[in-house]
Length: 508
Image (cartoon, helix red, strand yellow):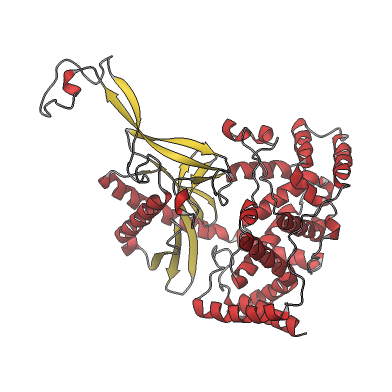
């Protein structure tokens, strides 16, 4: 009884501490003020004392000899469908991968979350999750205009000091903006892709180094020697001379490069980008009636806009180096100093293409996005209460795509959202237990469907939960976070509905 009352109190306290604005406004709303955080930690310590009699989190890897046969029978039935395209056959065959072994016996998951009934879930999604998404267009329009103004000022500053060239930005999603960087002429970038385990890059499953090169034009003429007088005017050659050769050389200790190397440094790029943002804001701040601050010093583009009304918008505007039109390298905050020249590769665009392709196989008004967004909501609210963990939003999206590959499309009807949400949470739980969640694209045959770059088609499979293998404390924290989320699921949905209803009643 004491444990239940304490948990209800902790959940209620956490929800009260969450931002009172639209939940989509705060991307980083897991961060609370220090005083409230200390108070909450005290409550959590008391809860841990009550839970001492509970068995510890098991790290044992579970196996089931009957799974392979089960999966094979399911896919044989799928392949008998006359209307399945060749690409869909390839998608189905991918379901035999080791990551999909986690689907065995998902109805016997250790933690059966207490969820509201399907009617409540549908009402909750329609009124509180989906509705907030529809309102985001106003914020997107504001952020797009502000980002364009800020980046124009940054380009002016970069043009004067001859630093990096800032290309046109892209809005990947609400509050997530990427800013491609390129070096000025005659310099260029050369990408060296890495997919190895020789060093501890556990937070970067696929990464690369970015080498700075210089394109030097040379001619066989005495005036080009180092001893030539600077005031000499040569009449023997011109820029159009056929003897002009282009020599590509590495730029060691170049601008924003790590010491004694030609490789771009993440820490130097972060400091330069933040400094340029501050200078640009000083140029344009007189036009706006709000404050702009850097939210995290370790994240180069984590920004927060604070209005006089007390409301705020937190968003990211991160510097990236493009790999191709659909992939880019970005900076991971809080990475170790020995990995300063290794940039993580993002394949978000390719993953979105795959999700769109899988969605075409589903019934009309399928519940897959609804299940994903509700799961993300639960994760977000739990993060706001107990802090962040190794479990991130993209893990939920990856798990959903694995489920879509191995589940009969007919099971994703609109009236199945409660069952599919349980399946999604069960899949995440089993993946955490085994510390295995395979990247949906890298090292899989799905590369033939999505047409990844050749370098990635040949890459080895990537385990997105590899950090949990390397760092046991990170694993335990993620497991505790997720299990607490499952226990609080019903209360978080119910309390949030009550909170929003009360807020609307007071404002009307």
